[in-house]
Image (cartoon, rainbow, N blue to C red; front, side, top):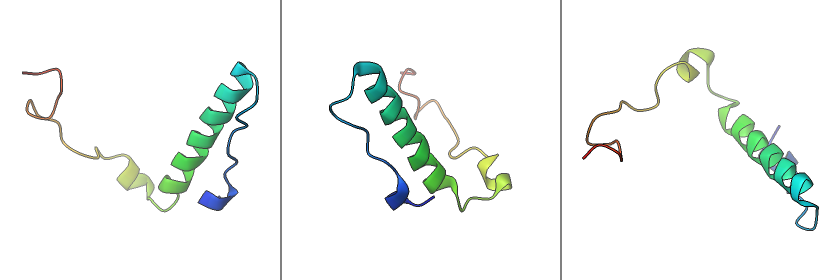
Length: 58
């Protein structure tokens, strides 16, 4: 799938249909972004965490 193949959710749909459409759109976006990433790379942490980067730690 490419970014151009994603379907923009219907802005005039009912609440549930709009929510499901938005979720499907974001799932498709994630699939496009992850398409070229190897399985080994996806299994690694994207960034290391530390006390200075976590918003709940003073």
